Length: 333
Image (cartoon, rainbow, N blue to C red; front, side, top):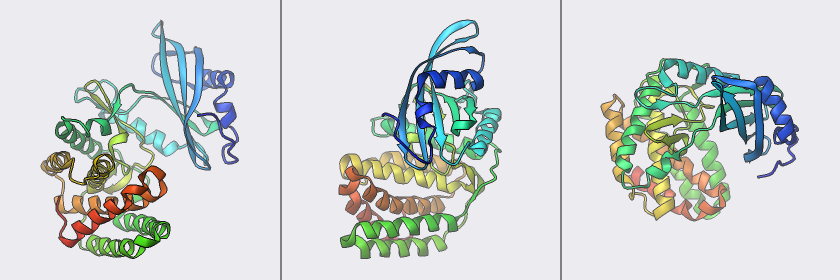
């Protein structure tokens, strides 16, 4: 992906310029044991770009670490509104709380590698591996789903707190806005979408709040990298104080959406859903509240399917699955 002109981030052309990136990294990169003046940037490419909001730049780097030459990749996350200092603080706190790269339990967050304030960029070491979502589609998905529950528990029990908060009211506000856009995008389904939204709101009003702690809040398969026997948690931009049930429910709904997207069948990965829910409950989770957040997230996927062209064909399937679950309230698997 080449740099795109973006008035909200006029520095993007500089960020993908190899020579300018090398100068910036030599000034600011702080990877453990690295000799910053030895940094050589071999490549710079934009891998993701949401115009007006953020982008990701990947740097191929060679540098001296511990006296030896190493070749590795750094990921630079850019925000149009400037450096994300809160997420930097959260990542550092998690690393100090047992999420470093050599923990005995094999659950980590990637090592921070510095900042480039003038580009609104935070840097981290790229972790080699595969997305958890790939493993959740494989034969061992139930075992990996249990590991997901353990990752969530470790985050929730880390003791790391956030200045941000997210309540059930906030979650419903996000859902309302999403379903309004979904109804506008799919006129033939609009009345059914509105009915699902109203039923979700009624169901949520009866739910019992779970434990409040630091939560990921955007927890799903692409946010965990499987690297050999180690799991790395990514993208902590939305970390906040919230109901721990949300993370598990969010992940469950994404498993269902992936099942629909890959097989056209909401139940194809139910063994992974059962394994995740059972492990989360054994870890102290509240099953009914988890399943409420599961349904709220799945309902939000109605909207997401309307705005991603290659998912338009699953909108009606997601909607029907939400309706099926609401018909047997309280919600089950």
